[in-house]
Amino acid sequence: MGAVLPFIGPALLALALPFLVLAVMPAGRPAWSALARRRTDRPPPPFATRSMVKRLERNLQLAGLTRVWSLRTLVLLKLVGAGGGLLLGVALFAARPGAAMVLVAVALLAVGYCAPDLVVQGRAKERQDRIRLELADTLDQVLISVEAGLGLETAIDRAGRHGRGPLAAELSRTVQDMRLGASRREAYAALAARSEVVDLQRFAKAIMQADAYGVSIGQVVRTQARDLRLKRRQRAEERAAKVPVRVLFPLMFCILPVLFVVVLGPAVSNLMAVFAAQ
Image (cartoon, rainbow, N blue to C red; front, top):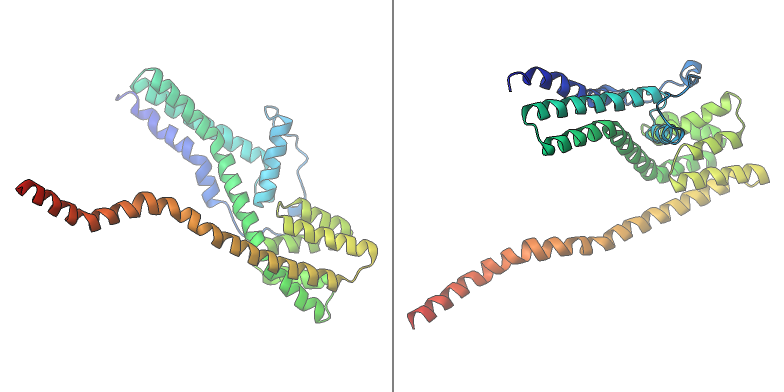
């Protein structure tokens, strides 16, 4: 066992490295400079398949990490995590050889390899949920600005500059794309592609159609804001309707048995004492 102890520290350090990088990674809004917008032309790692590269890039995009984290960094973290898990598994196997420890080593290898993916996917889901929650209120702000006489891009830029969440960052990036030469259709198409929120994609497509057919932008924004408020109320009502079903099983298996014991316990005890006396 003493010979194994020197390996445990480095193995645990290697296994914890991906989580340490994620913990200290900046979460603020990235800079919108030309240097920050420049994408590297380096080819993907040779050991990464095309489908893997596409999936990792999509997860990084949904998580909003493409400007502070590269694909190579994510792949490197996966390899470091796998190496740390393998070292820890080898150390455990050296301490207690056996088939069970082989399975534990394989499990640690898989966990270390998949841990960065799981963390990025969790951040992506959290970010998309925040965008979905912020969209209705943000569109109300845009609608107020448009009705006050501002242009759509100016209103969206104002909402992006005064906002703090991921939706504000996406809106600021959309306005910045147009300032750098992209057309309105291209900027809003990119906005829809960067998110999996259906309501945001529908809003971007409505703006593109209004720009193509000459429809009033104010009317489009007003309609989208009204629909989003209605959908938010419907989602709240749907969640409220699911509460009794979710409470049913904890009530049946956790609360009711205890309640029966407290209420019927003394009566059953008295009945047993009466029958015993007879």
